[in-house]
Image (cartoon, rainbow, N blue to C red; front, top):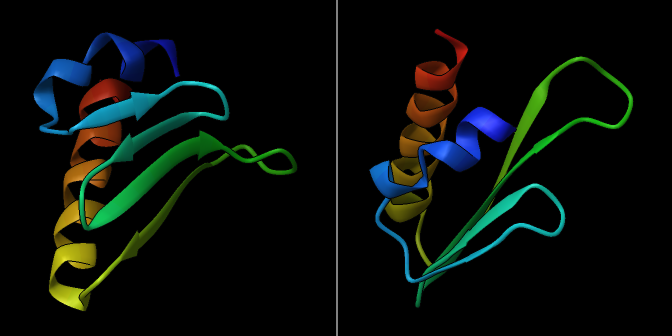
Length: 70
C-alpha cells in the first residue's frame, strides 16, 4: 500500500481518501484499492454511474497495483 501511495500522481482523480486503503473519488464514480483483511490479496471495489466507466477505473486501478508489484 505504501508503494501505491507513492504512485498516486499516475492516477487522474478529483479527491483521494487514505483512511481505509486508497479511495479515488470522481464526480461520477469512486474506486477503492485496499488490502483484504482475511486474505493476502489487494481488493479493487468500484462504483460508477455506468459500466464503461467502472471497467475503465478497474483497469486503471489494476494497472497501478501491477506497477507497484515490480
